[in-house]
Image (cartoon, rainbow, N blue to C red; front, side, top):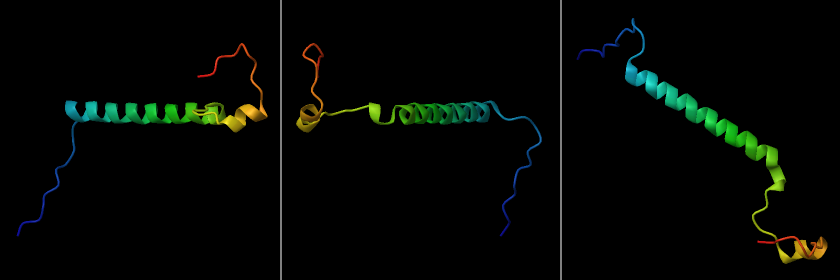
Length: 66
């Protein structure tokens, strides 16, 4: 059995590898920025208001509730 030969890297990155590295870094930055934005909002993002919420804090009649 011959052992696996490891290719030596002597030149610059191939075009495909550069693109893959660029995309991976871009996706990582996008995920990090989305995480920071969601962390900044914390509890100000509310997807649902229960009836108890409205009973505790009355809402002005001119405010739209969806």
